[in-house]
Length: 363
Image 1 (cartoon, rainbow, N blue to C red):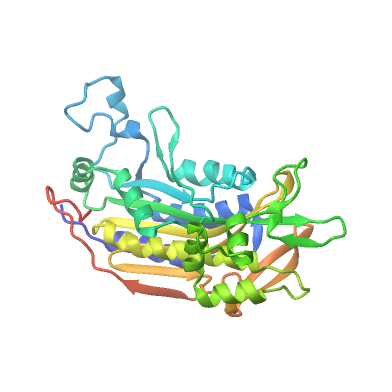
Image 2: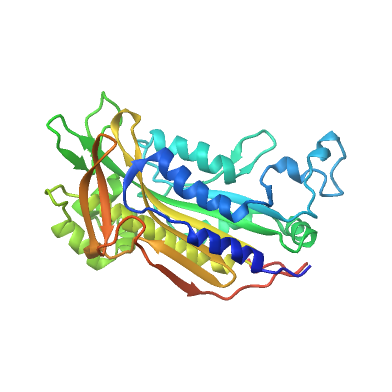
């Protein structure tokens, strides 16, 4: 059944007409609901969303027929099968609100759900966040989503059916608010009974005391690039009132680089019915479970086009301020003078692989 990409392309056009606010430290609820969830639903609204494994019951003749087969989806309807993956630094200090909120608000809506009702969320925890390898992240996530017989059933069920892969690239940043009103970035407290420590320790360690024999340091330095590494490790970047935010800028660049690497890799994984939505963000770890989130960038992959919007990877173009928000000082990052929704979109092309029954889709 021949796929017509025009309807899916129209969904993407509506997606890119939505505004996005980048760079502001906000509550996790606000960021996930008003940025990620709202964007993703535009891509699937009006379609049968296939994400519960019970919806696959009865689709294969080899399975024993029980009452569970009544849960099976009608693939003659326009259908989108969705999955979700995220990266997060494995640092145990990230026990706060933002991660659990992400799982409840984002992953619970777009990740595959097992027959027991648990989210089968793809979770990667590279030290420092971002991603160890964007191509591996993309391949594992797509390969786990559906096998070739199931893909054949979905694709032949309706000419408008497609798959959606959602990947959220996350890094983290410590924040301490001292009694005298001073705000310190790069450190936080794991609990009230522990002394403050570096967060993200890998990023702080890479910039403050680079160790050539440390593979994580080498990877983070590679993600940053030599000019960025030199600027951030030797000079740093400060807010208007002198607060050092080099750690925030480094975390932003690592997340954006990870998102970019993953976007470009998705093109080699998808066939003509593959669509990807990616985001980059920083979780700001704070004591007392008050984590916040800085949304950095978003991107899509579909029909030969990779499109991105948000912060870039040049540290010299970053600037920052502490601004009043929600009764406290919040970090506002800018890039090349741009802030909030004032970011241009960039595009690049990739070759689309055509899927054919029995021929696979290019893995």
